[in-house]
Image 1 (cartoon, rainbow, N blue to C red):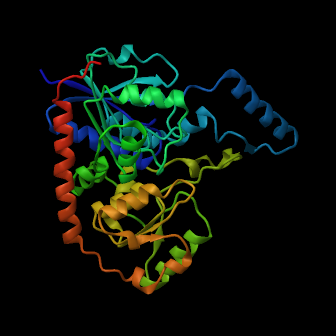
Image 2: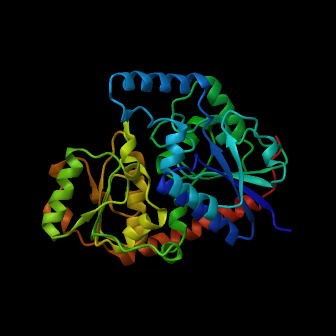
Image 3: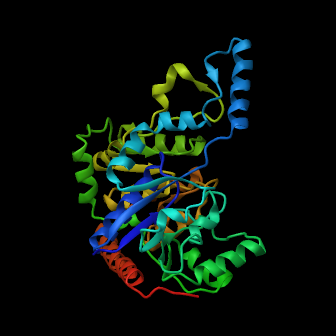
Length: 384
């Protein structure tokens, strides 16, 4: 009988890269002969006080005749509404799901039928991103379970913890059968801060050939993109607008997006359709159709590499540069990172990508990453 392995990652709602890395890791582990279950971790439901506060603010706005500008964008109901397409993908392509599991709940029982759990990938070890952070060190598992970290990310080049959190982390990591991280800085953090050796591996999305993603787009009869310059920008600003304008003019391309605008405070209920995330297959189709890509997203850059498309990475300082630096350094593409408009030179625009060399490097790293997974999952359980 095949061993049953659970995957634990960040909540899967509307993050294209987060959802696809889980999809790719699931496929990769299944190819090794395991039965895989995705643990559907979710943020705790809003409290009655939070809901009351939101309704009170909306009541005041109605009295002020601002009826259509309601503060709904941070509510559970809004998140569910805008995530209808992406959650549909999760529930169809990542099944069987275990859960939903709320982050403050006791999750010991849900893993009783599993032989082990892989935590990762994505920023699962970034305290300000991961709800119920200690869960992501698998401290809820019994001593008879396999524990593996695959391409876990701290998101930054440092990890600030209290002494209590550090002790919990060291104790938890001592029970792991295999520890791997996504960024080179993560190797240093695990070694210097917690005292364990670990391996740098590829983001799961890079483990699959682009044919997997093309098949996904075809499966959903995805329409062709409405342009040939794919701009995947999470945080629009003056720099991103200038870069897009420059690239558009330089190459004579037509820019298009596959994303939606999520209001920070106010939500116009008459424009609900503008806030629904497009299908994940449409996001994949964008990489298939694009002649050039501009992204301030880690996974936007990853998929440009997967599809061998020329790209510019706009450094997203707010979300952290460590992930970009590590990814680009891995493939010798440091010149693709733009931090100011002065970085957008003729040499950057006309850069010749050596895709043959990049793909060969990726093949070696895929082999090493799969070997790590295979060894960790087949190793003896550590009881301490």
